[in-house]
Amino acid sequence: MESFAYQAPNSLDAALALLAVQRQASVRTQILAGGTDMIVQLRSIDRDPRMIVDIKRIPETRRIALSADGLILGAAVAGAELSARGDVAAIYPGLVEAADLIGSTQIQGRASVGGNLCNASPAGDTIPALIANAAICQIAGPGGWRELPVEDFVVGVGRNALEPGEFLVALRLPVPAARSADAYLRFIPRTEMDIAVASAGVRVALDEQGVCTQARVAIGAVAVTALLVPEAAEALIGTRLDEAACAAAAAASSAAARPISDKRGTETYRRQVVGVLTRRAAVIARDRALGGQA
Amino acid sequence: MKQQVSSTINGEPVEFLCAADETALEVLRNRLSLTGTKEGCSTGDCGACSVLLDDRLVCSCLVFAAELEGRSVTTVEGIATPEQLHPVQQKLLEHAALQCGICTPGVVVAAKALIDANPNPTEEETRYWLAGNLCRCTGYDKIIRAVMDAAAEMRGATP
Image (cartoon, rainbow over all chains, first blue to last red; front, side, top):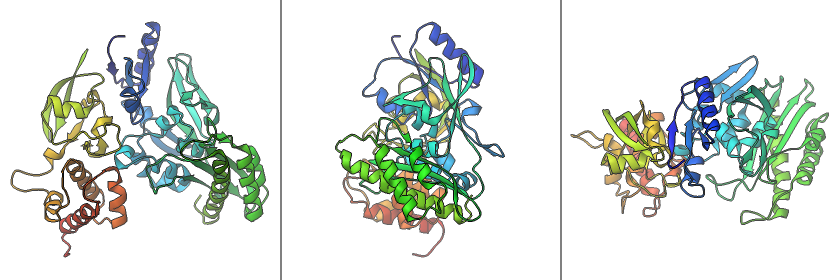
C-alpha cells in the first residue's frame, strides 16, 4: 500500500466485509476508535501506510447498555460519554474512576475504554479495573463472534489477542452481586495526566454480616500485562476485609508483581507500592459495598 | 487517494478534500485558512488545537479530517460574534491572562465548553478542566481568574 486510506463502515457486517477484503489483498489495516494513541503512533514510531477502519459509526461500538444482564460498553464509547452515565458509575465506580484518570478533558472527549485495552500498554488504567470486574471482550471476526476474558486479551506489551480480520466490538461486564463494589487506584508522582507507576483494581462482594464472599484483584504497571491475582482475592474471601486480610492481600499483590525498573520507579518501589494500592483499593471497595453503593 | 468530506464548521457548511492521514488541525489551518487554531505538540498534550467536535472538547491534532464527514466543528473563530467578544475572551483581556497568545485559542474554546457544561465551576473544577491546556507564560492564575469571572458574568452573578 502506497498511501493511507480511510473507511468508516456504518454496520458490523460492512466492517467485517471490508476487513475481509483487505485481508485477502494483504493490505495492512488498523482499527480506529478514539485515536488518542493511534494517531500519535502513526505520526511518530509507526508511519507506514495502511487502511484505517474507523469503527465509530457502527452502532454496537457506541452503546452503553445497562440491564439485568450487566453492562455492555461499546468499544468506541469515549471516556466523557461514560463519565456522564451516573447509573453506570453507581454500579462500576472503579471502572469509571479508571477511565476518568486517562488524560485531559480533550483526551476524555475521544479516548475509549476499548481502545485503552486494545492499545495494551502495561500501564493502561482501565485494564486492571476491567479485570477486577470480570469483563469479557466481545470480538467480531470472519468466524463470527467470540468472547475472551480481559485477562487473556492482552498478550504482551502493545499486543492483544485479536486475529487478522477481527476487532473488539464491546466489553461485557457481569452484574455484580448484592453488597458489592469496585475501586481502582494508581500511583503517579503528579496530581493527574501521568502514566501509572503501579495500579490496582479490586471488586469485593459481602454477605449480610459483612463477610467477603467474592473478590477479584488485578494489578497494573508491574508486569508486561495487567495481572489477575487470585492469591490476593483468596486472602480477602471469608474475612471482614479487616486490616490483617487487606495486609495479606497487599503481600499477595507484591509477591505476584514482576516489575521492571525505569525512570518512573524501581522494581523494589513498584512491588511495595502495588501492595499498598491493593490494600487501599480493597478498603475503598469494602466501604462502598457497606455503604450501599451496589 | 483524497477523501471528499462534507462538514459544518462554525455553523457554515464546508466541503474539502483531504488525505486519509491528514488531521482535522491540518485541514483547518492549511486547507480552510482557519489559522486561529494553533499547533503546539501535535500529540494531544498541550491543548493549543482544542476545538469542539459535535459540542465535545477534543484536540483537533488527534482527529482525522476524514472523520468530520457529517459532523460539526466549532473553532475559536466561531466563538465571538461580529459585534461582541465572548465573555471568556473579554475576561482574558481584562485580566491580562495571556502573553504570547499561542495557548489562548485553545483556552477560549476549552473554557467556553466548561462554562456551557458547568455554569458555576469551582476553582478546582476549572483547574482540572483546563489541565489539558498548557501555558508557558502566565503561570495559569490569571487564566483561572478570568474564566471564573466570565462564568460569573454569564450566570449574572455580581462579582
